[in-house]
Image 1 (cartoon, one colour):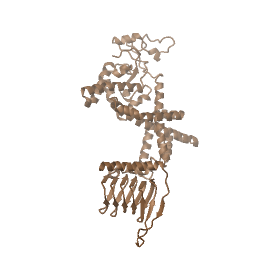
Image 2 (tube, rainbow, N blue to C red):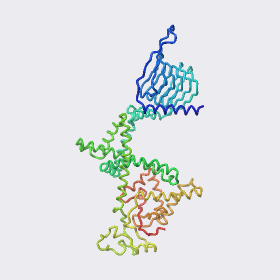
Image 3 (cartoon, rainbow, N blue to C red):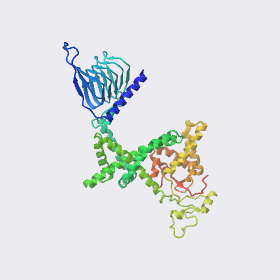
Image 4 (tube, helix red, strand yellow):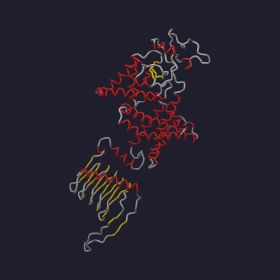
Amino acid sequence: MKTNLGWKAAGVVLGAWLAWSEAAAQPIESVDVVPTDPTESAPARFERHHQEIPFFGQNVVVETNEIYQPGLVLIGGKAVVRGEVRGDVVAVLADLEIEGKVDGDVVVVLGKTDLKDSAQVRDSVVAVGPVAVASGAAIGGDRVFIPWLSSLPGLGWVEQWLRHGLLWLRPLPHQHAWAWWITGILLLFYVLLSAVFPRPIRACAAVLEERPLATLGTGIVLLVLMGPLLLLLLVSVVGVIVMPFLACGLVLAYFFGKAAVYQVAGQQIARQLGLGVLDKPLASLVVGMALFTLLYVTPILGLLAWGAIVPVAMGAVMVALFRGLQRERGPAAVTAPILTPGGEGGSAGGDTAPSGVPAGSPAAGAPTMDSMAAGQAGIRWAESGMPCAGFWIRLLAAVIDGVVVFGALALLHLSRHWFLVWLAYHLALWSWRGTTIGGALLGLKLVRIDSRDVDFPVALVRGLSAILSAVVLGLGFFWVGWDNRRQSWHDKIAGTVIVHMPKGTPLF
C-alpha cells in the first residue's frame, strides 16, 4: 500500500511540474450554484472550475462556501483550504493549511503541512517537511511523514535556498543573511586565490579575452563529455585512481576559471568607465564579482548568468592548459651541468660546443651515444637538455602504474593496503631505476636537478611530499601545467624533475 502511495505521490508531483512547464495560466471560471434545498438558510456555495494548471508563487484560499475542483496544485506560496476540494491537493515548495475537506490525496513537498481539527482528508497524506496534525483531523488513508532538512539543526538554509532561490530561478536569495555571509567568504577566497596564484588566473584571463568563443565552446564540449567519461571511469579499475584526482581537478578548474571571469568582467567595466585604478587584477576581480552578485539576486537572469559562467570558466582553464602543453615543445628543460667521466662539467666532447651551436644550449648539452654507453657502464651523466614532461603524459603514466598496482592488489587480495603498496612501488622503482613501469613505457625518467642520482632518501621525500600535493584538492599535481620546469609541488620539495628520454634509451 505504501509503495503504491509513494508512486502515486511521485506521479502527482511530476504531473504538476509538467503541466506548469507546458501550459500558461488560465483564468478561473466561477459559476453560481443554486442550493439543493431552497428552504435552507445556509448561504449559497460556489463551485470553482479550472483546468489542471498549477499556481506559481501565489497564495490560494478556498473559502468555506466554495467547492474547488478538479484539484489544486501549487508551486511556491501558500494554500489555505477552508471549503472543499474535489480532487488531490499538491503543494511543492509551498505551505498547506487545511480546515475543510479534501476528496483525494494530499501531497506536500518541501513545505509546512497544518491539518486543523475540522480537516477531513478522504485518502492519504504524504508530507516531506514539518507536519502538524490536530487531534480532531480525519485522514482516511495512510500517513507518510518524512522530516525535511529544516527540522535538522544547521540545515534549514537548504530549504530557504530552494524556496527563495532555486524556485525563483536565481542562485542567491538576498533576503537571508547567510547568503551574504557565503558571498563574503567566496569574495575573500577569490581574492586570496588571485593573490597566491596570479599566474594561472592571468593565463586563464588572457585566453578569455583573446578567444572568448573558443573558450565557451571548449567548456560546453567538456561538460557534455564529462558524463560519459565519469561513467566509463566508474566501471573500470583505473577509475579508482583517476576519479578522486579528476574530481579535485574539476573543482579547482571551476574556481580558477570563475576568478578569471570575474577579473575580465571587472577590467572591461574599468576600461569602459575610464577608471584606471580599477584595472588592477585584485580590484577588477572585486568589481567583477560585485557585478555578477547583482545578477545572481535577479530572478531568471541570475540563473542564466550562473549557468553561463560555468562552461566559460571550465573552458578558460582547459584552453590555458592546452597552451601550456604546446609550450612544452619549447625550451623547458633541465639546466643541470653535464658530468663527464672526468667529473668536470661540460659537453660530452669537452668545453666547446659544436660549430654553430651556443655552448650551454639544449642541443649542445644533448647526450651522445658515447655518453649513453658510459652511463650504462656505471659512469654518471645528467640528462641536461632533455625536455621536461608535462601534466598529461605524467597522468597517463600514473594511469598505467595504477592498472599494474591495482591489478596485482586484486589478484593478491590486498586491496585494503593499497596506499602502502602504491607508495612502496614508487619508492622501490624510483630509487632503483629512476622510473616506474608506466614511465618506462612512455620514455620518462625521474632525475635530480643537481645531476645526482635519485636515491632512496630523495624518493622517500618525494613520495611523502606527494601527499601534500594531493590533500589540497590535487593542486600540487596540476601545478605541472603552469610551472616553467614542469615541476609539481613534491618535485620542488625533493629537487627532482621528470624528463623525456631519447628514443631507444633503455630504462630497465
